[in-house]
Length: 275
Image (tube, rainbow, N blue to C red):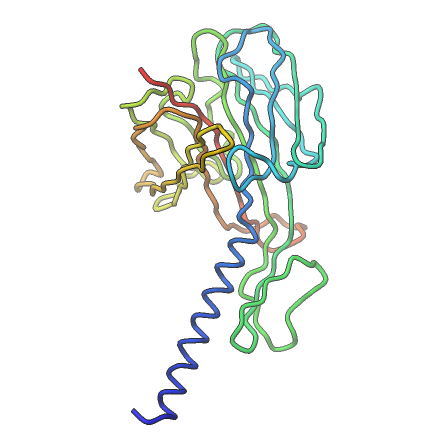
């Protein structure tokens, strides 16, 4: 191979490497993951429930508040209540609500947070990423993606014996629907759940699962699994701790939205105990 061919081959490899690096940086720019964390997963039926919500790279140490969304509480009989107090801090969002006195399982939700609008395009061999809504690719350059982030984070707490009314799917947007009760998980068992989008199972969908050490000196561990043809996963719980399951899915946005697509992010926080 002569010098020109060598230079040409090197240039192609360098371009591919640069493109991959840009894509990795784009992922890193979006690496903050939304979450909702109750102060306790076992509560008294008349307790004041307190939750933290935000965006974190290390769980559960929030760096960005969740924002002004409609935090809700689904009660053991299926009725839905708003959180009475929601406080927006610079690094996290804190919400509190007194429980109505009913025993059973409660579903906690941040509600929907619509976030940044992303555009990406390739120009001169480089992938450009923009979160500036007014910045568009130059004429003749094709968009690679154009979407707005759409985040929901949830968790479950139980007063007394767990029940499953609050676990029923919302049938709207992206969600993880537990089959195994998330407040009755122990090591040596499997956490079985279904991933749905608008009530329909997503097959072959990746779910990232993080385990937090719940201290400031250790990094969380991570794993991933894929749903089967029915949208289900049975994940073996080998370690106790507090976990977060993350699903990301790109889907069409409704008419009138700020972008043609939504980048859906759904997280479920749950706890695993030793038997």
